[in-house]
Length: 281
Image (cartoon, rainbow, N blue to C red; front, side, top):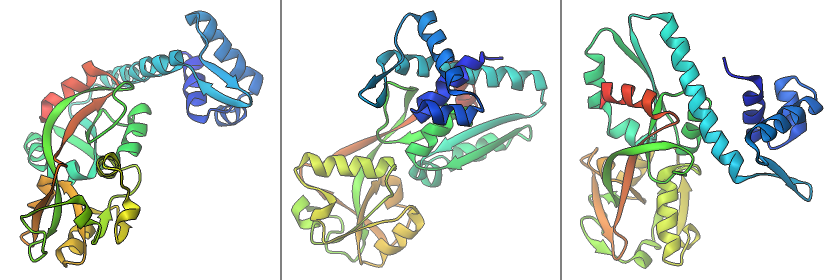
């Protein structure tokens, strides 16, 4: 069982407010302060500090957060081992490209063993990382960009990131300039999505933004995106597995914007995650 002061630290790290942390933990505000001061004394470093009236985390708080997240994963694994279950159960998170288009065959193979079961949560990058930190997932498979300083990770595979349009679209199987794409309606994923961040970064590196497109629509479902693109009314950008999921879709490339995105296994505790990753992948 972990020390309650660890949970106080993690709550304050999330809330960044002593009063809200006290309410969340059903504690007094001085009690929260006492727990944090104890940890600062124990580790010999300041964890939180005020700049005016704004509370901020120090670099030592970031380091401690990563360590405590790993400890939470270990604690969960110990509790599970005491239950002595005959079945092997894994909680997996996956971003939408990975969950819907990439890992189905590996999961099917894993489930061929009757003693195996799993829960698969398909969400955007931001929400999956939050779930990892709360020990709600054993690991996640995440496409694109995330803060690698905060989590353990290793590469699953790399995929090309391409323009996608209808087969009847004038861009189909061609190479076009970025400026040419601005005349089109663009469909992107919601904020917090790794796919959206990857495209936003690539466009901004060229000195432009989504506002340069004729119209930009946000949709958080790839099936709907594919329907809209296949109807020849819009374009999108996505990883290659999506572009081949329907006969009505085709790819196009943008000059001087070759992108390869990473799919990574992401976790808080390498030892625990590796055992479960190896069972499936």
